[in-house]
Picture: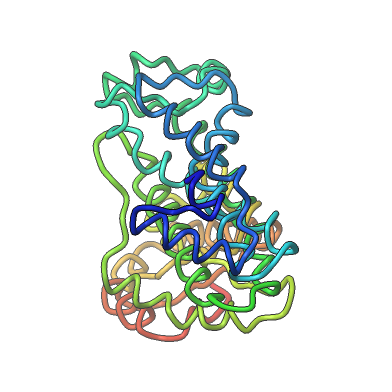
Amino acid sequence: MERAYRGEPLSEWEKGLAWALERWPIPFEAFLHMREGFQTDLGPVRLKTEEELLRYCYQVAGTVGRMMAPIAGGEKAAEKAVKLGQAMQLTNILRDVGEDLRRDRVYLPLDLLRAHGVRVEDLRAGRISPGYRSLMAYLEGKARALYREGLSGLEHLRVGRAAIALAALQYQGILDKLRLQGYDNLHRRAHLKPWERLWLIPKALLAARARRGSYPRPMVLVWHRADLRLSDHPALLQALSQGPVVGLVVLDPHNLRTSPRRRAWFLENVRALREAYRARGGAFGCWRAFPGKRCRRRRRGSGPRRSTP
C-alpha cells in the first residue's frame, strides 16, 4: 500500500491502487484506520463502551465510505459516507451476534449489556430476555439514525447513487427482519430473500433521484392478529419513533359473528389502536375480509388504504 502511494507499485493490486490514486485523492489515513479494525478481529473481541463500538464500525466500514467519497462525490459526501458505512457495519453486528459469539467475538459493548441487565453468559445460553430485546431495539435505533444521516448525502454523489441506495435499503431490510423475528439473532440469521431484494430496486431508483431530505425509508407493516395494545411492545414503540410504521387489522367475518357486546368491545379496541398509531405519527389500516386472502392481495398492491373500523 505504501508503495502504491509512493508511485512505486509492484503487484497487480498495487498498480490498480496507484492508478486510482493518480485520479482521486483517496486518503491514506483511511487504510491505516481500516487495518486497526482488522487487527481487532484477530483475537477474542470484547468492546467496553458504545463509543468503542462506533469507532470499530468506522474502522472496518466507515473507512470504505472515506475511500469511495472522492471517487463518487467529493469532500461534501465524505462525512455522510462514513455514517452510512457505520450503519451497515452495525447492522452486520446485530445480524451476526450468535455467529460471532461462536468465534469468541462480542461486539455488543459491555456498558450497554450491563445497562440492560444482560450477561455474556446469557448470550452463550441463547437467552432472548426482555432486557436483550431492549438492547437490540436501542442499537437498531442507533443504526437507523445513521442510515438517515448517511442517505442524506446521496445528493452529493456524481455516480453510484442507485447502487448505494439499494445496498442501504437492503441492510435496513435486515433490521426489519431482525425486529419481526423478535430480535432472535442468537439462533437465527436475519436475511432478505431474492424477491425481497428485487422489490427494493424501484425504491432505490427513487431515492437516487430524490431531493434532499426526501429519501424513502423502508416501511414496516405490522399485522395485529390478537394483541391490540401498543403498550405491550416496546420494540414497536421504538420503531414508531424512528420511521414509517403501518398497523394493520383484518376483521375476519367469522370472528365478528359473536355477541353484540363482545363485537362492540373488539371494535372499540381496534379504534383505540388506530388512535394510538396516529398519535405517534404512524398509519393504520383496517379491512373486513378473510385475513389470508386480503393480506396476499394487498402485498401485491401499492399499499394499505386507511379506513375506519
